[in-house]
Length: 172
Ligand SMILES: [Fe+2]
Ligand SMILES: [Fe+2]
Image (cartoon, rainbow, N blue to C red; front, side, top):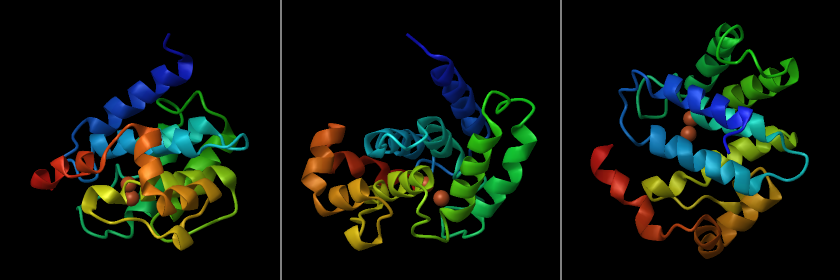
């Protein structure tokens, strides 16, 4: 059964996909895996609504597929404009966490906030799509560090295999 959160996430996904012109590297398939990773990493103190929203919004304001270090800040700046529409149903606290996670995901390794750090590691665990195994020492959460050090377990727990990360390569 679709919950209110599922319905919100679907709308946000459609919003982010609309007009997306940068292909799959930072596109929908990446966002879906970040959402899945975030839910896998979420401990009891993680706000999963924020993690799921982060998945579909953190790269939305990229201008290219290179480093583009400013795209996190641009996302944080653009989110308040969605407050009256797409993001009307979340709390001020959730919006604040979402903005911080987006703003810092390009420039910060760890904040100490469980929700923001889960967002960071959910994104990092998808670096394998570009052939990079994340460094356990650079992960923000204990679970993230565990999976970075035990990639076989990550594949097992996400029901994916190493090969699943290479079909995207053609379309960068
Ligand atoms: Fe990003
Ligand atoms: Fe990303």
